[in-house]
Amino acid sequence: MVIGTEMTVNLFMIVIYLIILYVFNRAKSKFRGGSIERVINLILISVFFLLCADYTVLLKFVLSDDLRYVIEVLFRLIALSVLAVGGLRLLSI
Image (cartoon, rainbow, N blue to C red; front, top):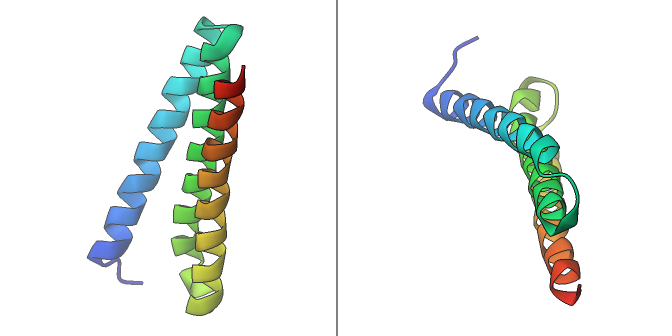
């Protein structure tokens, strides 16, 4: 198995997502209640779905490229939808 530059960049992005999840999870326990916790939850959920979208690169050896791309796009759409709907709910409060 040869790891190319695209795979290296995607693995690095996955590490960055894991760091973001760890930091915001720690911040969530510090800022309990209120709108700050809601914003942190939105960020955690959207970063988790973005992590899942980038994780589909590792399924390259199992799935076809078209199916993998569809799954990646769906996870990215879910992440952006969570941010959009959650942001609108925060504005209405």
